[in-house]
Amino acid sequence: MISSIPQSRAFRGTYNAYIALFFLFLIAPLLVVAVFSFNDSLFPSLPWMGGTLDWYFSDTPERQGLFHDDAILESMVTSLLVATGVTVLSVLLALSNAFLFERHDFKGKSFLYSLMLVPLVIPGVILGISVLAFGSNIANNVEDNWGIYLDFLRPGLVMVILGQFAFISTICTLVISARLRKFDIQLEEAALNLGASRFDVFRTITLPWLRPAIVGSAIVAFLMSFENFNTTLILVGSDAPLTITMFDRLRQGATPVLNAVSVLLMVVSGLLALISVFVQRKEPGQ
Amino acid sequence: MNAFSSSKASGKKLALFLLLTPFALHLFFLILLPHLEILNISLRERVSYGIYKFSLMNYEAFFTEPLYWRTFLRTAVMSILTTAITLIVAFPVAWYIAKVVRGRTKGLLFLACLIPFWVSELVRTYGWMILLRETGVISNLLQWAGLAVGPVEMLYNDATVMLGLVYTSMLFMVVPLVSTLDGMDDSLVEAAYDLGGNGWNALREVVIPYAMPGIVSGCIVVFMLSLGNYLTPILLGGKDSLWFTDQIFTQFITRFNWEQGAAFGVLLLILSSLIVWLGLKLSRQSFSETMGR
Image 1 (cartoon, helix red, strand yellow):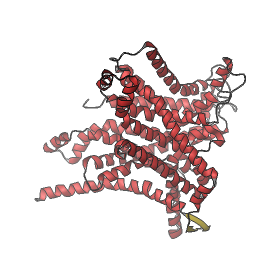
Image 2 (tube, rainbow over the protein chains, first blue to last red):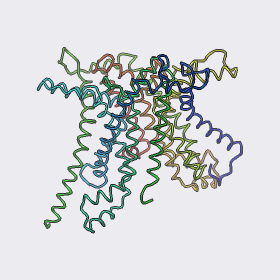
Image 3 (cartoon, chains in turn orange, red):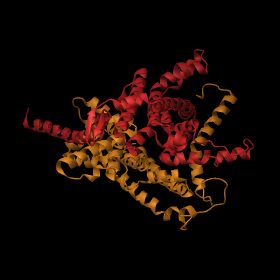
Image 4 (cartoon, each protein chain N blue to C red):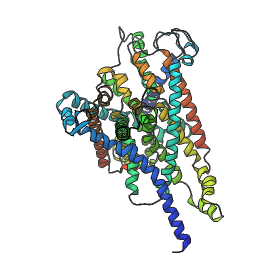
């Protein structure tokens, strides 16, 4: 509790133990996933048969390590593709939205702002089915009336990108708007007074100020897309992103290669997290 | 008005228009129209190939088929329970981070709370499966300690599903709680003690009212995430998990009965909007402020 208020030793002890237990609870599932990727066994479970790197590098019929498992490697590439598309779209829209809501006043602004936030409270499965149904409807109509086949509106990667973009862009908008709100508009005015063009001001003053938020939101968007499951499951076609492939494997019965994939994901997420912390720390003006 | 300022005003208008266009395209084509489409599909009945008529049949089916509405109710109740448990577990942790520790430790503990959520939900759930299954780590630990005779299966029951949901939603409760508690002046609690209150009084009369905005936004987000979750109930609850999103998936994808699936989707959306609205109403907060945090 607050240091100025006396607490009994027993209370403090219990409280500290509770906090320790909580962090054990947080870390335990990740820890076992990581540990069992090194178990020299065909199953990700006890008993411990000794350490091995087979589930990363081995290439035998019964033990296909992560780096020789073509299905997993292919779906990683698919996920990378999707995540890149989602990130680019989301950050661009978020930039535009941030200027729209922070720099302009117009009729119905607060109502539109609420509408912009709506995707945050729509369950992923429902977002998925609605985008799927709408896409199919357009594709069917175009096909019936003009005989043109719009295959990208059928389940597949384009739809996965659109479905994820629908809600990830909102999160990016919140991140970039928050940063833009703290911007001192006088900096832009000063530059304009000194004869800079609008574009120059944006490029040399506003954009550098927004950079940490842009990088941060891009990292968040990338990770959210890479890890998305619900919306993706509904919209996926024949090319499965990584989460879908892993889910199918899990249902068939997991082998430690899934643990190895998970470890790789943890390492990459950890690195991205570090980058984003680093970028935020180097914020100009702080 | 001279020429310069009018060109400036029209420039501003053009900029507004250019910024509104992508926003409107996204809103209409990815949010509004798709959801209207779902509503439309849910209100029709297939007569023959490509021919439909207006019908409430799909909603009738929901209320007359016990499996459907029971699953719906079950999902709602379990999500509410999950939200309550998450709040109770997270509150002391948030207090610890906001008020007990200082400086570097504080930052580190806060970061430690975030780390698991940088990892995919699939990986986290997989971790729980390894821990809890019959041949899993905890079962083995119990046997080793002599607390159980044979292997213990801890997967595929409701308690485990809720454990998974609590785990997966924890971040979304801890973060808003820490940020509201951080803003609270310690002297408020000291004053409560000076006025003769004990710890419980201070918690009930001072801390909880102060933290209410954080509590509400945390609860809303956790509830939404649990209600809309698919992965955790399916993997930890097994085939009989009976989660409503699974019903939607089954109707839409497996049975290709879009009309029924759409009706389920609309019902779930209504339920979640209702609860969000109720939460905001009870705590007198606005949607934009709560979600925009």
